[in-house]
Length: 198
Image (cartoon, rainbow, N blue to C red; front, side, top):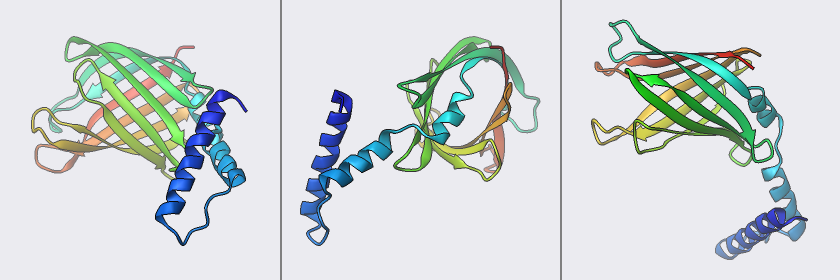
């Protein structure tokens, strides 16, 4: 057992013991059961292998809408996607432009074996907050639907959005973001078409 596994096991064992003290009617988790739970929680599986198919360099064409009745603004960029931490997370480093200004963003996407959900973060140079999202398979092959939220600087309130990531094929992906428009109705705010370069 390496140091990382040992540390994780110790944490899980402590939580199991603490939990047994709170709920006296439950049998404390055995050391073997705790180790099995830890092993299952940390092992990359099929969802992580699916994320790994996005690793590489991508050209991106971005369309964004402020008003659903107006034509979209368009920009371009490049995304470097890399699997990190033993194939557990996909890191995206994006560079391009947004509203005529230089734009950079970094995102991390993984699959939480405990929640059985995709988890994602996004942060960029056009804000100081972090968008947090969770997602699941939509029932359509290659499509993951996320629900995300961040704090809107215009309203000072938390805003929720829906995001749809579609792996079209080995060389193409699309990302769509939806939320409530000015009239309160659902609208598309952003659409990104990724084409793999390498």
